[in-house]
Length: 140
Image 1 (cartoon, rainbow, N blue to C red):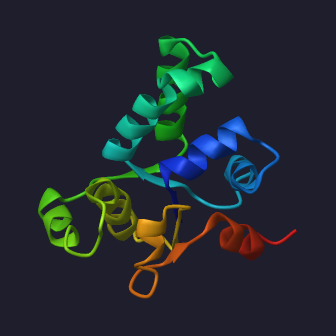
Image 2: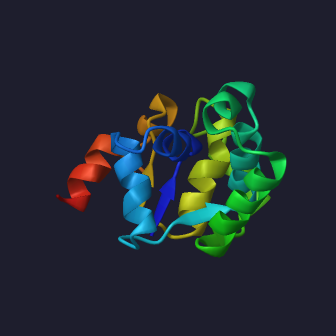
């Protein structure tokens, strides 16, 4: 059970031969179960619509919605308790990361994979790993 931060997912899509690309490919190969929340799916859809991402992927709004629907279908979608998010705000420097960490906790995920320094700073209390660390755990 793994939560992938949006930065890892997007990097993996744009750069399939990179470390994040290997992580996304491992998920596609069913090496782990992806845990995601509705707020993360919303963020994924929003980020996929950014002009700089669109220049690379060239997906229509319908293709983006279908892609996000596939993530919903092939992942374990968990409900995040908003009152719990309020408690987590004191643990993180960036409020944007609260739902990602809350998804990890709500989904009882083994790992949260992120390249975000703000999330990596709480790795002593939560199972946060960098993409490189997670790929090393996956093995060859």
